[in-house]
Length: 151
Image 1 (tube, helix red, strand yellow):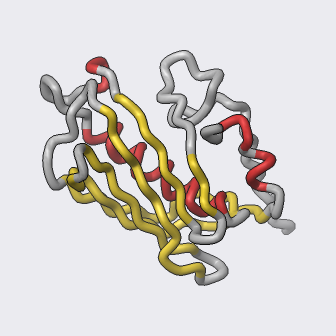
Image 2 (cartoon, helix red, strand yellow; image 1 turned 135 degrees about the horizontal axis):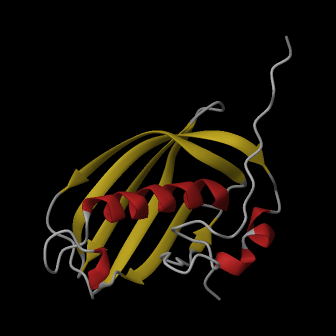
């Protein structure tokens, strides 16, 4: 029996970064391939809250996850999340400019260990660690992702 290889297609409809998703977050990224990092800034609107004035935990987890994926992409690796552990330190406010940062901690070949934070006003409000699984390498990743990068 032959094993069928899965193919993941980017249709620009990703909830976190796709420009075609009408209800998505439409995140844009600054990537640093030399350091394996990614940064995004965004304001999360009230319709994504959990409690009044606080971003829903699922949205926070999405931010943390996506920035780690883009940290890997900064170095050419397109990945999927294998495991993620999220810590919620303080409520993340809606309607305020948030800074999301991700970084590669260790590339083990078959997996990549990453970390990320959500900050407001210089304080870390949530953090995560994840193991991402590489599915494809492309040395032209910055060109491929150019529409999703901050100019």
